[in-house]
Length: 330
Image (cartoon, rainbow, N blue to C red; front, side, top):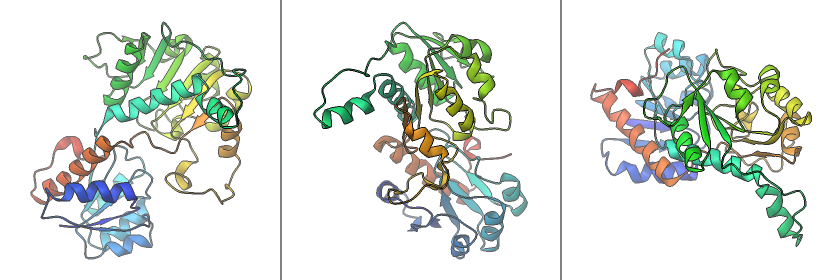
């Protein structure tokens, strides 16, 4: 099986090359460029393509891939909101993903953001580098004894629940489906979670129903001085409303690994560019906001798991032995 790999980063190539030794039937060709209607044409002669959560797998791209003879799209991620599934079904293209590679990696990064913004690590680091050892402006709050509100208790959300529980926090959660393994978690309705949580962490997929889940209306219901963390999907939060909340002193801190405008920024070095709009720049200007570049998944263990499952998905497709949990359908 020949796979064309789009938007290759150094860590992608290293992890997939290491995993290839167990899959001698698979040949990968790596491209630096990402998917687009123009680059999709390069897939002619390949059996499958491999894309990431930031790739354009919209209707036009799917159409070009189908004309190139592609029957399989391998998503090396859990998310698939960037894939036009209706177009894939129409063209007879199977989409496979990696539903659970290392939930602890993302959950640990979520707590990392919460701790860093709470204890002003980003400010303290810069101050000490300038030989400023003053503690003014660095006062945080104890998480121990506080209430952690976890939105979504799938594998990643469950891992975050366990981390918060380990910190001595009372853990409450909101999810349509309750996780039976979390016997220490109290499930509540969404309004109750907003009104009682000192830390709110988002761990749910992006759907039509929860688009802009965090907006002015829901922000107003939150406790004052809440810490908000998002490591899921940027569009769960309406950025303009988030900025309104920050300016109105609603948040003690905000930690974002994802945000609405990230598409052109994520994984790219744009240090010499002028950003297209002011929204991202405004977020970065606030002293109580930390933004990272969609790096929650980026651990050696997670990369190894992503590589192995992605390549196994390819072999299962070829052998007509697909795992239902990995098949993406509308």
